[in-house]
Every structure is written in C-alpha cells, then in structure tokens.
Length: 346
Image 1 (cartoon, one colour):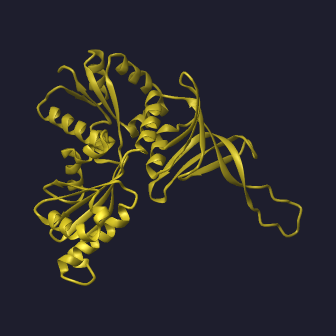
Image 2 (cartoon, rainbow, N blue to C red; image 1 turned 90 degrees about the vertical axis):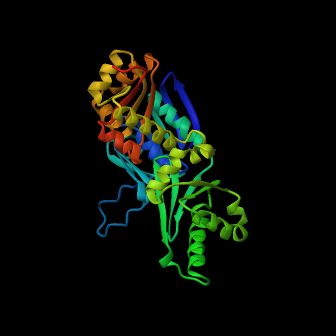
Image 3 (cartoon, helix red, strand yellow; image 1 turned 120 degrees about the horizontal axis):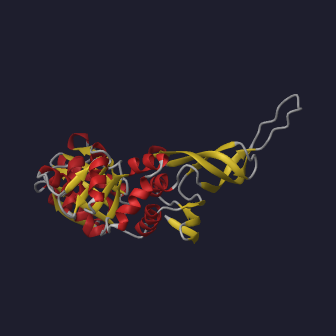
C-alpha cells in the first residue's frame, strides 16, 4: 500500500492511497465502510443524444467522481474490489455508480477513522517493504507451492511425480517441474521456505543448486510432518516465516489461535463468545482481544462495537483483528467471532 497524502485532524479527514497488491485490495474491504466518501478516477457513459433516428454508440469517458459508499465486494479471483454508492460530486450527481478498484488506482477516502483502520493502513504500508515469501512443501512424489499473503496462504500449485513430462529419470522430471513452477511463483519474492518430512527436500535442493543458484540463494528449509495446507500451517507455527517476515500477520494469528485453543482445553485464562468476553471486560481481565474481521464489519453496521473496543484499550488490553480467509480466523468465527486471552481466570 502506498499512502500519497494524509490530511487528518484527530481521526477526522482524508487519506489518499494507492493499492499495489491483491493484499491491499483485501485490506481496503475492512478500511472502507458504508457511509464513507470515496473519490476515484473512473469511466462513465456520457449522456446520449435522444432525438436522433439512429442512436449513437455511447462511449465511456474518464471522470473523477465522489461517491457515498453503500456496498463493497472483494472479488479475490478477479483481483478487484467493487465499491457501489450514490454520486455526490462529479457528473451525474444523484445517480449510482460502481468503482472497480484494481491495483494502481488512486483512492481518496474521507471519514471518521477508527484506530484499527489506521493501524491496518500502517501495516499494509510497512508490509510493502517486507520480503514476500513462497512456501514449497514437498515429500516423495508430491509437492505443493503456496504464496504467503496477508489474508492467508494462497495455494499456487500442486505437483505430483506421475504428472511430470520431460527428459531424465521420473524423479528428476518431478524436481524439474517443481523448479519450473517455483521460478514463476517466486519471481517477485525475496524468500522461499522449502519444507516437508524426510529427505526429499534436501534431494530437491541438491538438484536445484547447480541449475538455479540465484533461486537457491533465497531458500531456507524447515522440517514438517506433512505437506499441503497442514504443512504450510506447520511452517507458520514453527516460526520459519516469522524469521523472514518478522511480525507476519498470519503467523501471529496462528500462534494466538494455538494459545487460545490450549487455554480452552485446560479451562484456563480464556473467554470466548460475546457474553463471556463482556464479563471479562467488566473484571478488567482482558490481556489480548481476538476479533474476526467479518464480525467486526457486521457489528459496525449495527453500531456499538467501537465503544466496546475503546473500553478494552482503556483497560490496557491489546486488540488483534483476525482474517477470516485464513484458518485461524475461521476457527475464531466458529467460536463466536470474538475471544480473549486473560490476565487472570474469571
């Protein structure tokens, strides 16, 4: 995320920013809310001349519009965020328009900013300077490649030994195909984690080193008991991505979820579900509040959640917003969307 301008008085005012990655579009889904005022350069049809016998083809022209947001949709697989609302400034004021926000579009957002939204912008801006990580989870005959994104791990490809085509032994063909996928997946990454059980990962690295020395130089290895999504999550829990990305959002969420589930299992210092969490707040016991982004979005539409969050901060509690696209966030949503690690048991 690139922040072009901040014009704030307290938490009121305008921020102009440019989403630079798919991750940034996902962040915007939780930064922009119903009722915000958003300006962007967009295309809109000019009015057609109505008194001609044969109507002319109406062409779209570039215009800068300001709309009052009513709906948002994040289309992860088409790499765009759709923002729909009533035009308040620009041509056709009083009509509805939809911004199709893609990477590189300049957006100006005017609103009363919430603390977590400003923190999310800061995090997205800082993360653009951090290494991007690719994980290869490999065992004999099968491999998975995943891209570490802010909303979780996106599975890039699965390779099996039987699917290989090329020259040499079947195992060499398997390694060759993994290397081909990895070259493409890691073209913009600065770090690669090669993980898996047994010695297959070491054999793959011996194959890769003389053929792709530059790629090899970016690799760290990690032992895991499995591949696939379970293997990816194991890499996160073991801290391999942390060592590369420092405060990786998803690695942090994985650790917190592990601790939350551990405390639930032993009936320890934990509260989950809105009623239990409110009781914990009354006792001043909340050390870390965990809240799912989807629940936060829905509760904000109803109103009232932000005063609750302010009370948590007033009692020196830390707030972590979980992505519900990634598994820890989904688990949190299943527990009611909100939970707390406590200073003491209540």
